Image (cartoon, rainbow, N blue to C red; front, top):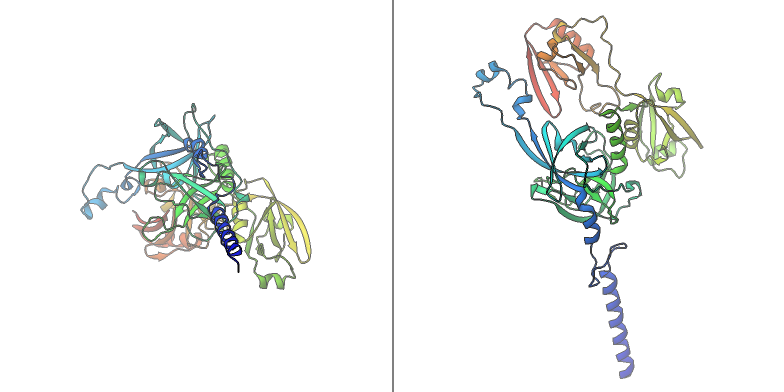
Length: 459
């Protein structure tokens, strides 16, 4: 090889190497360049970060909400000193989504049991917040602050996300102040984690730590695509697995909180299972690998009235694809009672459109004619299909407590799940009624209240 050809080969190889390095160093599409030609997110963050706020919460001492710790006899028996309850302080994050109305989204667990909520803006203004409504099932809460000089984030389209899309998380980790981290979408539609009652998480490796809860997950356009809510880590710190509630779910919750102050969940009246390749083959479906198979239908339910049948495969609801059974539960659970849902259904080789009107999720078991003097003032129901705790715990749920009734004075609260009476296991309302009639006082009621197990003594 001549000296000239050798030099040409070296120059060509060098050019390829420079091109490869330039290509590898090129920023993601949509990231602007600064005056030096370097990729930067600073212009986008300048517009976005004023809409992400810090939330400080003053909450009750846990002893104040524990009827046992309020009982003087219990405190003397266990030698618990009569100290004045001390308020608890905690911090989290929030996102302003409507500047004109002063609406702020955050997590339910951030403001749970709050006596006072203060919102601190990026410009250091502090505003007292009022709770509009909260939904523990999705861990979403909506606050309202005084409008005026506020910045708000625009909603993006979380349904258009793909694994690998770049995202930015903004919040107040460990209470140190507003912090920005970046990463990619690691997975979509995460369910079955047991973090919330209704799950359809965006998973990201953008660092999310304690205090980030309620903060914003945004795309490179600065649009809100998720509310940061949880992490998985052995020590409570970030290990690259964080979760955000997609705005497609958040907006449905927000709409109901604005209308009702709570989420009024509905039911379709079906039991579904995930579609598997084996099930698809047995049902004669080709080219369909995602969906929810109807395995049972409640009589006289919205599903039965709409004409759904066993072995139907739901592949879409209101125009959005259904990937699995959890998707059906989420879509139905966030559709207001009385509204209609359009279902795309595969039945054998046919594609059908089915319209069903959503019914009430919680149907209280009638106690008419049943006298329960031990729990006078309480309404009780079985834990039925569609309830967040269905399949996880057995017992009887208290759906309502009358003010100043014997049940209220005993410390019972709506939502309590009774699973034992005097060491006798309770699985449903029928077993509870038998136990209350036959057991002698005092009654020791074992119940589940949120994440806590309590025992109340009724004399």
